[in-house]
Length: 129
Image (cartoon, rainbow, N blue to C red; front, side, top):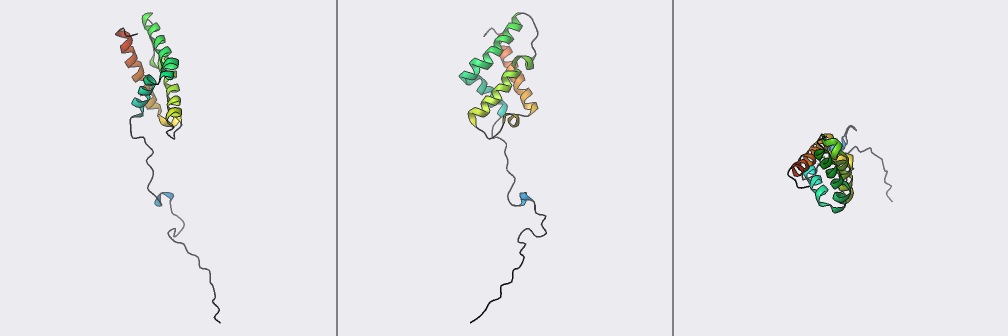
């Protein structure tokens, strides 16, 4: 009969000195979306019937009222709230794995507000509304 003596050895493996970073296991993930989010949200605002009817159209009519009355209309005051609500509705509708505050940066949100405002003001001036 042979008796084997088992000795526990400490194996460090790949970690070595214990200073291994998590990104050494896998490449960092690129969580950016493969399309222009500002343009996509702007299209969503116009093409989603419930959002357009409840949010965007009333904002446009407010812009038209101010324009017809000869009053100035600041983009943020006219369509800012509608754009914020659009980002929330967009995230709920498409489940992109991002919260509304993560989807657009502050600068991208400003671009969205200005885009909607300028396009709709052009339509108002041309008499489309």
